[in-house]
Image (cartoon, rainbow, N blue to C red):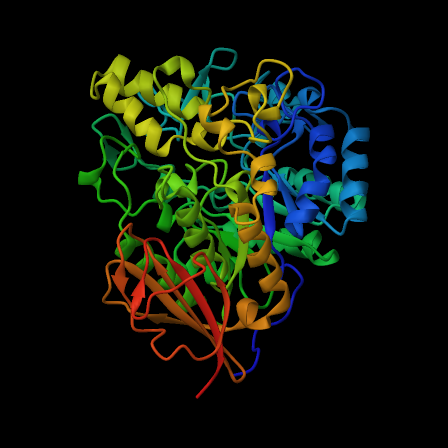
Length: 562
């Protein structure tokens, strides 16, 4: 079986996501910055990653931590200057590390010049840059709920109309139906490409085309309607992305990945098609939300852990059904998800390291481009929320106020327990660099509290321990660079009847790669390695037991095909 996929550098790469606010603070103000990233490039070079995906560093009033942009061609004051950015870009490139920017063009900040003008009057030249609607019976134009709770419509007194905001009220949605908006966006993207960046991760890109009828959505939780069917994968989204590709993306050698809420397999085949007419790959969310509504407290909020059988069924579906047609992106966590070892594994002191290594093996041996979220490579865990005062994320704060305070649907303790399990702030606690005060993240007061376990879990300790999670990730990355089968091999599910082992094979040429991962804290029978033929590429155990996988054991064997 030979390589049938079109080769590309970004298919062979490993991407590391940096959330700048929480990565490294160089000036003691408690907020991570661009200079902090530059100072830690040697660490990332040692890890072996190829690409940094940089969460937004553009100018922003920070209602949603930089995803509300007020100037696409300037740098947020908290993070530094454009000169700092240029120096970081040059230093990264000197170390053969590429930089991918976060492109946020479904919405802007309400402090962006376009919106400041748009809200002034109905006949302002920028009015149609955004989505304005007349009241319906004196109220909102429809019943849509914002992703951050409450109505997705905000009344504006100046013109007595409502504007759409699928997220915060300070994040008005752009009107992509307006050709001038598209011109502005494509011109801005070209500006960054000419600066020398290496790609774009596109925030909620599947939401840029809305159903122009703006119908009511199905009511969830008895309060608001679901906008999903009318916003996600909308009627003109592929037309818009093909135009973006023609006018910008096709002119440069870029990594492009779209965050695609509500994406299906069939839609993904369009977004990330092999012809390259739109994007390189998409992020789907199916494996991050496998629980039934009955397993949730309200909305997305839950404290239940996902079951292997459900996670595996979804990931295998994406592996097998995109084969030969589109490219997968592989991730366990990011800035919007809880910590991988806490959500999918076991973060107890006894099991954390071996569990984190197992999850890494399970993901990095699949077909697709793997993403590592900052701190994942040292096994950082979820934090704990004792009160609302511990929260910084607008999603958590609004959900607490809506469900606990306003509607009294959920007890406060239950909501905080859900935050412990799935809140976005779990991923946003500062990077744990060492065991000193504030984990070496800052000499000041961190913008969000450091996870108290930083004295045990930190990069300095990981680098001093040859058996650490860090060096395991380093080896996984090196193996991907050395073995084309890990990048391009065809995926074959194995042991599908098992509720405790995730196993699969990869096939390329005359080689077979066999992967088996025990997702439990108990020994489990496994017959895949009985004959012990082939070469073990990696395992999180030094000694094996015949016919068994030890707790959270992962094994990868490369052999010649029969």
